[in-house]
Length: 209
Image 1: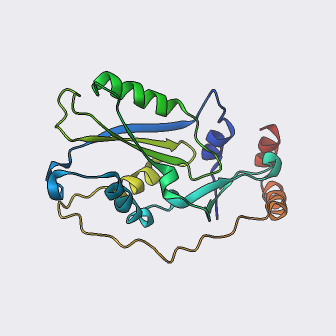
Image 2: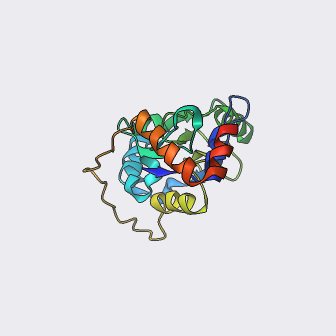
Image 3: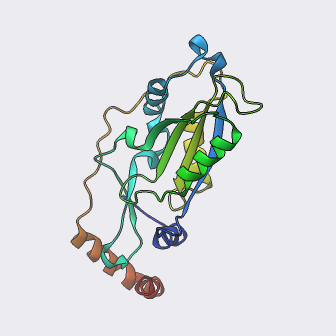
């Protein structure tokens, strides 16, 4: 269990339906060098599953202290569901750049579920009429909450899923992953009281949230 910094906590506090605090990117992949020249959605799921242990944030969710009397914590999600976080759609006809932008904007505009690990990937197929994109390519729209992503964690996620080595040697998925239990709210309040006594300035700031 790791507590958020004041800056990261601010991004969680300011999240609303009208002001979502996630960031993202749209990446396009050419599968022509993959075995058989094609990559299916199940292949992508297996690939990501095999690399989840490359960044802790993949399987951690946010737990807030009651009444926000202290900054939230990152804890392992005991109910982690990969297929909730990795989704799959295809562009409607004609599948051109305009359609890709419309779909990306719609997906990106949706707020994230703050009770689950704060990232989503949407695999988008049907790009054959996007100018300049090789036939058979697919896009992946990344959404990551700003509370979860900074320079270090963003680099960890990127390195976990990408290789400089064209052989892409397999990595070992941590099948022994044992998530910690959600912290008891009473224990969180007791810890908040201790933290706020030790740091009265932060305690006053928490009361103003």
